[in-house]
Amino acid sequence: MTKATASSTASTRRKTPASSSKASSKATATATATATATTILLVRHGQTPTTGKVLPGRAKGLHLADEGRRQADIAAHRISELSKVDAVYSSPLERAKETAAPIAKALGLRTQIERGLFECDFGDWTGEELKKLMKLPEWQTVQRAPSTFRFPNGESFTEMQTRMVSALDRLRAKHPGGTIVCVSHADTIKAAVAHALGTHIDLFQRIVISPASVSAISWHSGGPVVLAVNSTGRPLTELRPA
Image (cartoon, rainbow, N blue to C red):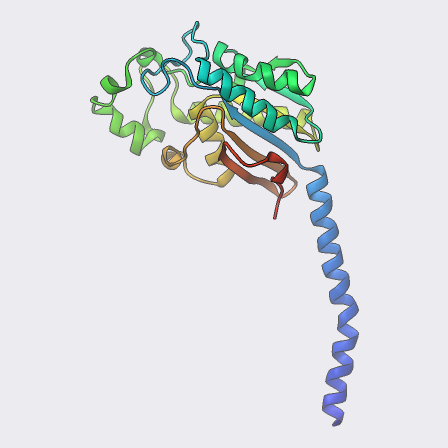
């Protein structure tokens, strides 16, 4: 062995403990961040008699259909398999509260109403048939450039996203290191997922949120991590950072 080779080998040996220490520290930091992360399960309400036909908005009196109640029961079963859930929050609307009810019952919790989870205020478009709205020239703006659109006498998409994200920030601050359920609506959940992904609101229409689906976002010191979007089947116990 030459002196140069021996020197190089010795140098490598001296660096090994430091490299091992750094790897160990990184693993410890990752484990710590995961342990203290707050996870929010965003659940869309179950199917209603008008799902896919009407833009119900904040109109009162819309309840779950039989299929929607079945979907809510399935979501409750999936969520109940988790080791611990700290709280269940819901939009004030009936269809959201009826979806939250079996979830809260399965967990032995009570549903807490959070107005920040409210449906978008569609203003004058509330209650209109979707096939009629799709014929309006404004519909293309809603689909392709929602950041520029405000519903007549209602909310803008950016206001809706700010409201929803702010509500989630408040709720996760109340449950550091915990897991909570938030039952809300398709557009509000899409907006929250887009924000967590760092996706512009103009692209949020590309995200699909099905009735009674679960989307999971975990927040830790490094920011949000999206664990699942529009999950309707596999066990939620599998959701964890890679």
